[in-house]
Amino acid sequence: MDYKSRKKARQIVTATVLLVFIIIAVLSALGKTDDIYSAVGLNKGKVTPTDDFVRVIDVGQGDSILICSNGRSALIDTGDGTTDICSKLRSYGIREIDALLISHIHTDHTGGFDDIASRLTVDNLIMPDFGKTDENVKPVNTVVRSVLAEDGEMFTAKQGMNFCVGDFEITVIGYYTDAKDENNRSVIAMAEIDGRRFLFTGDAESNAETRLLEDGINVDCDVLKVGHHGSSYSCSKDFLKSCTPEYAVISCGEGNQYSHPHGVTLSRLSDAGVDIYRTDLNGDITFYVDNGKIKVDTEK
Image (tube, rainbow, N blue to C red; front, top):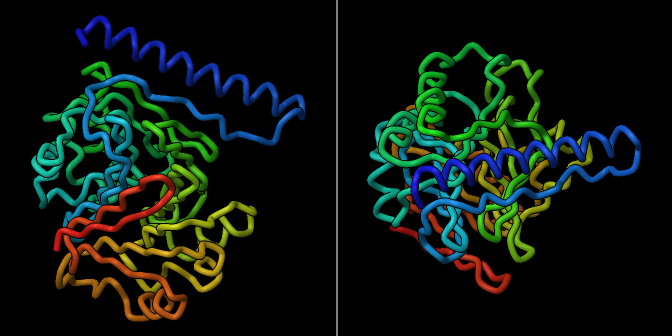
């Protein structure tokens, strides 16, 4: 696809996104709908792997999650910068990212942001509200400007917004900008395909988990990406009871200084009968979805 065609495609996507939000706002104001989950497809970019899967990438003590479907790709977070995330993505066949979602701007989630922006094409960015934090803003904002300079688009995360990547529908189900700390301001997203649901919690801890439950948000999922690398402050009993995952995946570095994942979190998951996978033990962890069934594959 040449530059003019790609630019026109981005303009169409941007216009569609704006139209969807306008329609939602108007209908909500009229009291005619409570449904804010109207999907917007990102139908452009270089075709990449055709399998439907979620891969939790081993990036050490950080987070980076790849979602692929029908040759389209999304990435949630970019690791801590100590892993060559771009080389990993290229080894998977990824050359262009349709959507990059940053859950929050701690360096263990944005460390590879600059590298990705400089070596890969990022078509759409979904970012937290910079005005709600003063942590790590300057370097992240510099990368955002470089993506925009390459004709990428940026959207500020809002609870209820969603988009499609292939057959995956990804929805922001929680984003509490008034939380007192950056972890609990994580953008929390649900990806759904063929009736299977994947919950991505960033570094959210029990405070954010409780607010999700109080807001009546449906957190039931098949796969739970455990919050904050499995710290003792995440994955509370009530939250886990509502999630009822079959699988839990924890992204953490081998022998990390924080002793993540914490024993109490592992015990909660084990007591609930959840199958636990960890990047420090299993390397890359991939959940393939085929005809509504999940198959797990690990690097180690």
